[in-house]
Length: 188
Image (cartoon, rainbow, N blue to C red; front, side, top):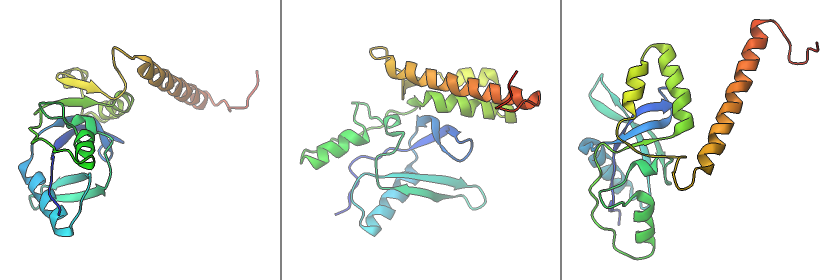
């Protein structure tokens, strides 16, 4: 029996890698067409289990095209939380332990962020001219949760920030060496 117990849809505001990757900033937004298409497709093939599926809208024919189907919990699962805090992992747990999964009502316009990926993707969107500083700052309005940052446990965020700063420093040194024609093994 293939019945959907909890369904969420959303929109990628920014992606990493740019234009083709996972959501670095996403918003939970109901799309009845995508939800219906997915539930019908999974029912036809008899699929049972958790699912993360991506689509792209094709303006040429007005249809959604499947990009990838992942029979697992997706990276952005915390973007999709209902009004009572139910997400796909909690729904999966309830189902696997024989408990009933309550009907879910997605929290519309909830935003979720992957901090390090979004910094990098935002830089690329800015360089291509599709993101201004003002638009970037406004895009964070409504972010309810981030992958790394928690006030009660800042250590994972600090480790991620340190890693990101080390990568940025490495990139800058490499770029400066290239600009001035220095090799990595050059000595003074």
